[in-house]
Length: 340
Ligand code: GDP
Image (cartoon, rainbow, N blue to C red; front, side, top):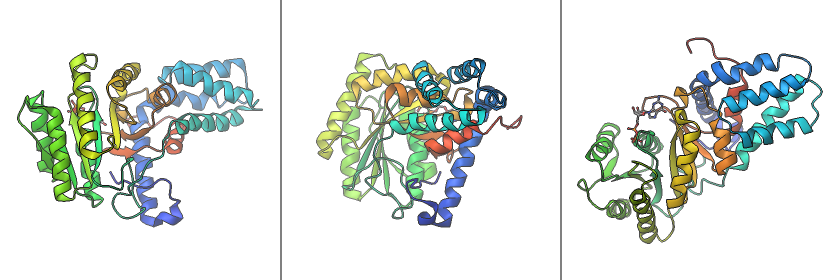
């Protein structure tokens, strides 16, 4: 994945950034092919009708709720589209696009205090100008947390930033080994202690090491088993507090990794994690594996959290920065060809 500044216009960012943006759009479109084939694909026929009938509103509601957008976001979006009294189905489509984008934009937060990589050409996370920027990554086991960290570390490294990862999931030996394995493969450094060690101490050491080595970003992996276990929540709060002590500020980003295939369950997980740490953004993995990509609207509307990245496949580059407009356009672009 290439990181890029989506606030720049193509003209400002230059041709190569334009190409990168297009590559991101293609990756997102492909990852959404299941969602388009099943749920959003139906929009093409629903909106193919010329008249705005009660049936049309019902079908739209069915599509959005079926795709996991959640009742809150669905009702809010459709109420606003209806209130604009669209004259025909084409006008419904235009207003629908605007309102879906608006739901996502309302949850966006200012970010990019550090421009990572070539100036102005790439940014992904909300990080600080006083290095190291620290990104605490939380999520249940199996959500794709370790893979996400490896992909992010890889992307930032490729953008020219020295990266360090803290293997602070000390509960499972396999988690430490997995991150170290990625570090070797993709050439980033991993700070690790032995299994069972104090996870907050690993995070602390990683920040110290990053300072000593002038690393720009530290990604802190954390334990992820059973979100409703009090000890896990206590551990995450402690890691957060220790990072704050070591940095002199709270973590620059607390990235919650959610598996898109778990649908509404992901929202419950988010609420659980938010009790322990102040989650600032979401990375939505396995978008390619779900037919219910509408979950992004529920995340924005019900949790008020921005989605920063989406996982688009199994490979090390299969991560795309999230762009509200591009995402909605991909959803509304009609059914993906069979087999895509
Ligand atoms: P963790 O337990 O949360 O650290 O999860 P892992 O990083 O080990 O990932 C769990 C599984 O999900 C692995 O098999 C990954 O390859 C897979 N995975 C992660 N992200 C994605 C994604 O975006 N798409 C697909 N299809 N698989 C993914």
